[in-house]
Length: 396
Image 1 (cartoon, rainbow, N blue to C red):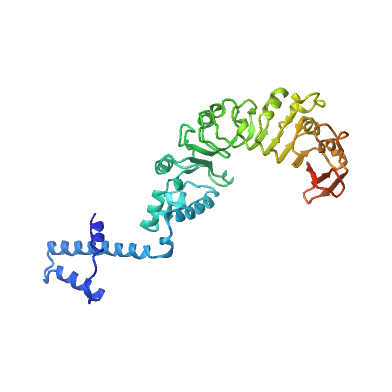
Image 2: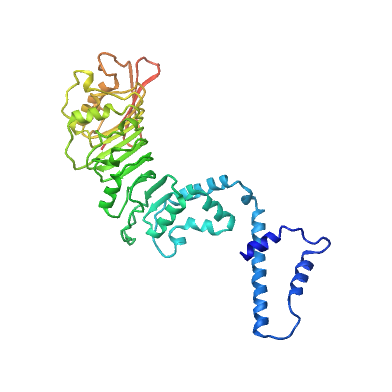
């Protein structure tokens, strides 16, 4: 309060005709008793005067800092700069050690000066990204300062083998009500708590990356704004979820689960009307033994698809592509157990549209190898004409 009172007094014009040194020296000397005594009362007076001068120096330093070019930037611009710096640092592994400034180094930006700290405190978006593992008191501080801004919750990369694993950390939230982006890859806390969290409604959720989770009751089947879903080591697949029609990006990696009925898979894929990027890794088993579909009810039309990436046995990939009807311009990546171009021949008919290779043949098919042992296939309806399909085959 004393420094604020002194700062308000500084708004008054300084006495004209006097140098700064003369003004402050005469003001100070006029307040000091001209005595040689060293009584406790006199010593206390000197200490009070010194504290007042220190407060005055802080005020002058703050005024000098405000004149720096960076301090004259609008708070919105400084907020964008700070946001970029924070995004770069959050990619690194968090090590919970000692003081908060060592565990979360970006917090030191708030200690540079009062102005920078005020920019941080007034910008709720700078506090909305919580990177686990953070001790509860720090997570709670971030939640409080984010002031109900849409949250981003991610996990720090897994520790190196030689790094001591931290004790499991509790999740900072109990529901997904205010979460916009969640990435649980690398989460090392309680799986039960995580499963319970992921089964709560997510009205603001737009991006979700989850690992080793069942799709049953995912987001309580209530995530109307979800646009990107990536499930790694999925225990079950979300073919019946209500949020499928809104997805733009879907990536599914399935391991150690029984195959769902093919009718369920087709019905789920048919609901991906807005999908642009689709990755299906090791979850094409139901298609391995299916013949060419006899009617359109057994086919999947994805009008917005731009990139399709599938991985599985050759039978899985062929069976799946038999049921796909995609735009003419599409990039397809196929990873399967193949060792050469000739072994990928069963896939060639699917360069053609739905009615099959014989009904709409390609006049020009070109092959080109890449450094990573993949083969790119470019198909045209006419020699020298525009590219109609681009496929990339790779094998392992």
